[in-house]
Image (cartoon, rainbow, N blue to C red):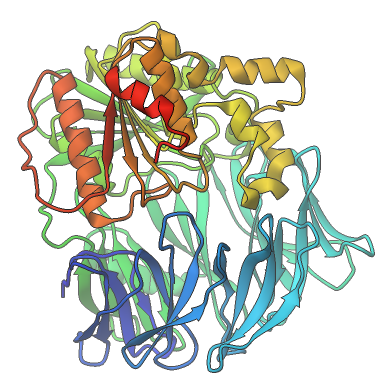
Length: 627
């Protein structure tokens, strides 16, 4: 059953009666409700809030919640769905609200985090879903995170130290420490959940430089952590999710990713339904949710050349039924995608994804597509940007350069202080490898990246000795000194970690290094056309990062275009704005590779404003705010 385009993954109600997903295939988002017993769509609920991004069920039958960001500034509000009607559940003007917890033990309530009192710190409250009453639970006095049990009791609070390490406390005021996480392990260590009785805390921890392990730590009030057992360990891979048995909290299934995502059963009897699903689907199932005492499962099937498909499943009777595909109107792309281990000049290897059209092995025009973060990773599963680049005839290279998450602590820590340095070398080495193998045409290489990736491609264009055809930078960081000095308010508790990972502008030598490795100061050495894309309400990377880069390129006589979206944030969310952005990028890339863009110019309403050098620069410079 396919209704519109999926806007976020589906979710199953705790009683197993309904599956819901947001559809963006209409003029405004709708919530699609699927009746599990009848195996059919029962309703399409209109009136969803503007720019709604996620939906989840509560433990009250028929009650759901969605978060929305009306302007792109990440001032999230909370909306309640009941009997087909949307109402505002919670909104704090100028603040960010998020769901911090839902629990079967407190079905009529949810745990809410809000930074209304202090933009830098989130306080925690309990929201009564029936009355809307909010009750304070924990006032944030300077910590970075808090971990609650199923009764919404705060069990551990987290602080970031000046050396970038993290401390987990039972009681910070009484100096009762649970666990100290050294800087070298800080980006790998993640809290998963507490056991149902609250006696154990499950954490993902690094194992040496290359491994990850899931461990159970004894968590008793006021006592330091003690190792109970190691549940699972893996090399050069990451554990994405832990699915636990609800009544005990004991982990049963893991989603693990190295080259591709796979499910791991933690006991032999749990493997049987996975084997059955692999036979039925012809590929690896990804288990998203289990409800009603494991009676119903919600699954995804991933491919490299098509959007995710979603299914319901009853393991007891091995019954599988299709739900929808993320974009049902899209045909399967005629592309390939495979993982390769690219050798680097340092002797290490970077897992890289190589994609392109299925039309022979000749050297192709190439896009180096750099992921954001940088403490993230790219994977094999379908990606819309990769797909349309490959369908236009490009070879697409996506390296997991040093700093990428998912390959062990050593790979993450190798990026400390290396923005603009060895992290860039990894990108150059990836291109060299593709050229040596005959995959990439060295005379036709374009650079594309967003956020950190936008920074990396701009800096590469400014410092590399090779010639590039063009650069596309979306919401890019362009000034490292300014970024680290003026972190977004919600990130400031992590400032010590950021300074150690990127650099400290308060130290003169490091400040000079940050300035030297900032694209805005190197605009004069960029030798190819540049397209900058940015939302004016970006709460992570200020739009001034792009406008200053545009001006610097203009003053240096460079060919630059700036696409501004006054009603968007770090990501372009509006459907018409997304189409305008994609068509702009497609035309820009087609023009630079010597071809033409034959995609139709769709009519529609977009807020996009274009500025081009040289004449547009003077106009922009006279404005106090470019948007």
